[in-house]
Image (cartoon, rainbow, N blue to C red; front, side, top):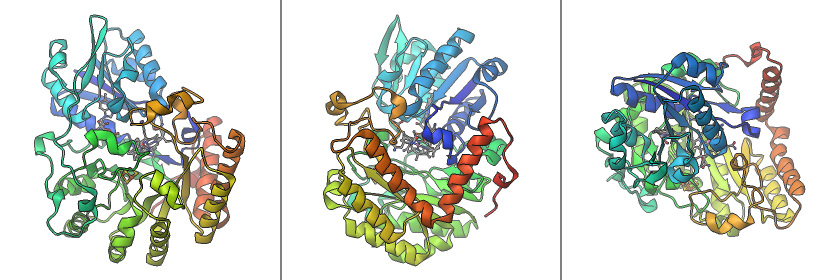
Length: 475
Ligand code: B12
Ligand code: SF4
């Protein structure tokens, strides 16, 4: 059978500026699953290719279409399914991805045949084992499907999961709970990176290109109240065997690798084993990874080793600079811990990308306090997102009557979906923009990133080829 795999995007502020453009790792993993069953695949990501979807559909003339996307692209996914159904009425159309995982009902429209809400790899494997035959759908966990004009929702199927408690996550015990990885048969295969190899020159992370994505685990054992990621895969933290991670790294043809695990620096013995294996296998890469402030503080002695191993930037969710807000977010951090993490990272000479989350209930004084904190530490780069209740999480239904919009494209953490309590929405946005822009004053990296984003956008709008100065940046 012929499969077409599509990453759907919805124009948002992020997609307009494109400070980061990456390979569609999810499609590359799914392609590997499909190829294991002897079928052929065509991948398509409109961020990397200029050709239109209908052209790709015509040229590929697939029997099966797989659509992936985030919440912001929900309407795009449905519209793409409708367009494909019109163009190729016999097509089998599947929708999946992180939003579908917790919100399958959002995809129950006539143009879509199947919604995958369990672990994508496991479910797809099961569907392929039965050649996606309709008779097998009632027995396949992790899908919702249409039959006789009705939608049916089967129970979720998850990757064999290992629950790592947060105390284990940061403990220094040598007995690693992370050794319990899922059986090989349920692990995702290594991504097929041929698509990345073709379009690597179009990927970038801020000012550097190319960038490859690496996944070494699913989930996060922490319980931050606002976080969508921790509910994926049944809320279980599932690390992949390190040999598999090393094979993946060795095959990824990019000096810069972004480890997209929700939190990579979790369990010291695993981190140390990762660093040992990099050395043993002589894998020389630069890394960007997510971490928590408490890991940095509790394991500050590891920072020089991480730096020497190529960790050039840690992305750290500091979220807030006052205890009450941190407690409300259930972040299990203190402002002092956040401060210490910043100081230690500076001392180690490592780049720290700080993530803050402002709240619609914030007052002018909260913004002022945050700005003072940012100024005092001369932070850069940092981002601000707006606290946004996410569909599929506890608390979403209670927040529903307060929403000022129902447009999923606004669920990008850069729009107010709740009315601000203490100021007008435009004043809130102004406060955000002002707070965001401080870093422009002291960070050449941020200035370069913004300048490149603006010139790239202008050139794209004018249909001009990328400027020479935007080409390959070697580390
Ligand atoms: C890296 C990343 C990005 C990268 C893009 C990465 C990529 N792969 O293209 C960048 C920086 C560009 C990005 C941008 C945005 N992101 Co982002 N991102 C992530 C992050 C950290 C990792 C994603 C990743 O690559 N994972 C690895 C892949 C292999 O896993 P996966 O996507 O889960 O796919 C697997 C399964 O879901 C399944 N699957 C996926 N699709 C399908 C389809 C079918 C048919 C099937 C069967 C299975 C299946 O199989 C895959 C293989 O295992 C996640 C966090 C997370 N935990 O997911 C946030 C995350 C996905 N992002 C999020 C958001 C909101 C955004 C933005 C909208 C933010 C913004 N301010 O605009 C933009 C949207 C831009 C766009 N148009 O794509 C949210 C999505 C929430 C939601 N409910 O949809 C997440 C979960 C973070 C969060 N804060 O909650 N992001
Ligand atoms: S915000 Fe970070 S630390 Fe908290 S649950 Fe989510 S991924 Fe884990």
